[in-house]
Length: 79
Image 1: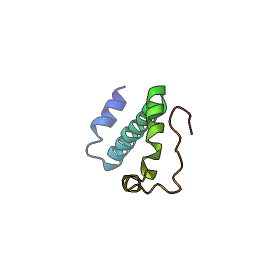
Image 2: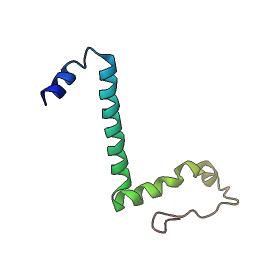
Image 3: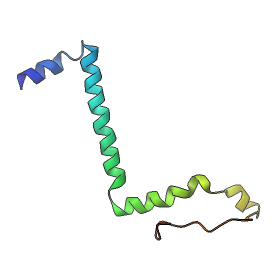
Image 4: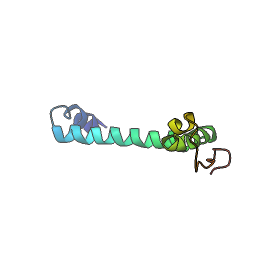
């Protein structure tokens, strides 16, 4: 255990060790974000409802020009 603490204490002067520590921190953060996003049914339904936001044409709907506009699925049906 003291070897690990000594390695960590020396990390602030050695850029290679600091890079390794940063890589581990970023990897753990990324995995934590993935677990948060991919678990939970309420969150999944909310994220599924956000799926079509880039495709929504609000300008066309506001001017009444909805030609060829199909009904998009929603999170309840998984479409």
